[in-house]
Amino acid sequence: MIEQLYTCKYCNAKFTKEKTLSVHMCEQKRRFLQKDERRVQLGFQTFIRFYELCQKVTKPKTYEEFCKSPYYTAFVKFGSFVSNVKPLYPDKYIDYVVTSGVKLDHWCREEMYQKYAIDLILRERVETAMERSIKTMMDWGDDKGAPWNDYFRYASLNRAVMDIKDGKISPWLILNCKSGKDMMKRFNDEQLQIVFPIMDPNHWALRFKRLPADVEMVKEVTKEAKL
Image (tube, rainbow, N blue to C red):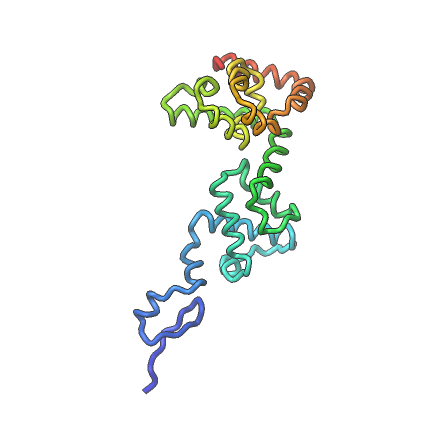
C-alpha cells in the first residue's frame, strides 16, 4: 500500500500527515500570508514600478513573481521605510528612488529621502505647500485639543523642527506670518542648522520676489487665520 503524501503548494515539501502540512511554514508560504501587510504592499508596488520604469516591462509583475524574487526582502525593507517615514507624495518618491540609479540596498537611507524632500519643497506650488501645512497644523490641534492656528505659538520646537525638516510645514507659511517668524527666532543653533536646507533664506527671498501674487495670497490667508 502506497502511503498518501501531502504536498506544500508553495515549496513542494511532502508530509505524511495533513496536520503536519497545515502547520508547516516555509518561506514562500510566509510571504504569501504576509501579502496584505502595508510594508509588503509598498514593497510590491515598488517592485512593479522598478520593472516598468527601468526594465520597460509592459505586463505588470505578479505577486507570485515578487515572492520568488531574490530581492523580495530588500523591497519589503524599503516598503517598511516608506510606511514609517510617510514621505511627501509616496508614489512620486517610489518613482524617484527607482529611477535614481542608486543601489536598492541604499534606498532606505535618510539622506536620500532628504534630498528628494528638499528638492520638492523648494520647487512645489504654493497651493500644495499651504494645503499640506494647514493640514499638519490641524492634526496637531486635534492631537493637543488646541486651535490649529496656535501651532507656531505653542507646538514644541522639536516637533516644529521635524515637521519643517520632513516638509510638513512649508516656508511659504512660516516666513509670511508673524507667529511663524517669531517661532523661528526661538530655535537654537542646532535646530536652525537642521532646518536650514529647507529654510534657506536666499532661496526664499528670491522665490518671494519672483512670485509676489502668491506671497500676497499667503498673507491674506495668514491674516484671516490670525497667524
